[in-house]
Image (cartoon, rainbow, N blue to C red; front, side, top):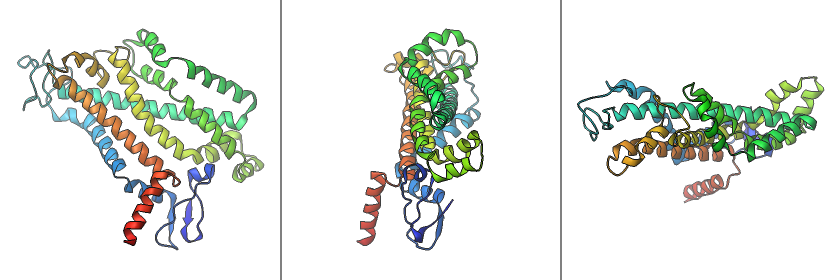
Length: 325
C-alpha cells in the first residue's frame, strides 16, 4: 500500500482498525510506503535501535560463540576448578571444571530459541482464535472465549510445574508448547475486539459479496490489518517467554540436565553469587540485558506503528522546535 503524502491520505495496518493517520512526510508530493515511514520512526528511537543491536548481537553470540572456544559445554578441564575469568577460560570455570563461556552460550542459545518459538506459536494462536471468535460470533465465539477465560484463571506456573515430571527426559519442545499454551489469551481477546470492528469495514463486506470463503477473508483482509498489534505482541512475548522459562528452570521444572538454559545456570549457581560471582553474574547479566533490549524494541515498534502515540508526538514537537530555532 502506498501513501500519496500531499493528499493527506490515511493508510497502514493499524489505521484500518483504529483510523490512525500516517505521519506527513517533510517533502510533499513524494510517495512513501507505510513500511518506510515505520522504519523512519523506529530509527528515531535511539533506545529501540540499541535494543535491536543488542538482540542481534546476542543471537549471533549464542550461535557463533561456541565455535570461538575450544571448550564444549559438556567438557571439563580437570586442571581448572572454580577458576575466575582468565585467558584460557574467559568466563572462568565451575566446580567441575566446565568452561562458563561455553555453558553460558549454550544456555543463552536454548533460552533464545525457546523464547522465539513460544512467541511465534502464542501470537499465531492468538491471531487465529481471536479472529475466528470475532468473525463467526455465535457458538464459536462463546466456545472459544470460554476456553480463553478458563486458561486465564488457571495458575500456569503451577500447572507446568506439576506436569514437568511427565516431560522430564523428553524433548524440550514440550516445554515450549506448555509455555505457549498459557501466553496467548489476552492477545486473543484484543484481536477479537479488533475483528468485530474490521468485519464491518467496506473491504471485508466487498470480499463477502464476492463470495470469498471465511478463511480467506480472515487470512487476507482481517489478520493483515492487525499486523502492528501482532508484531508488537510477538516481540514482547519473546522476553516474557524467556523470563517464564528462566523461572521454571530455576526451580527445576524447565530445561532438564544434561542440557542447560540461562534459568538452570542461574538456579545452580545462585548460592555462589557472593563467593564465586562469575558463576552467577554472566548468565544473569545476559538475561537482564536481553529482556531490557526486548522491552526497548517493543516500545520502539509500538511508537513507530502508532503515530498517535504520545511519545511520538512529543518527539516530533521537539524536532520541529529544534528545526525552527
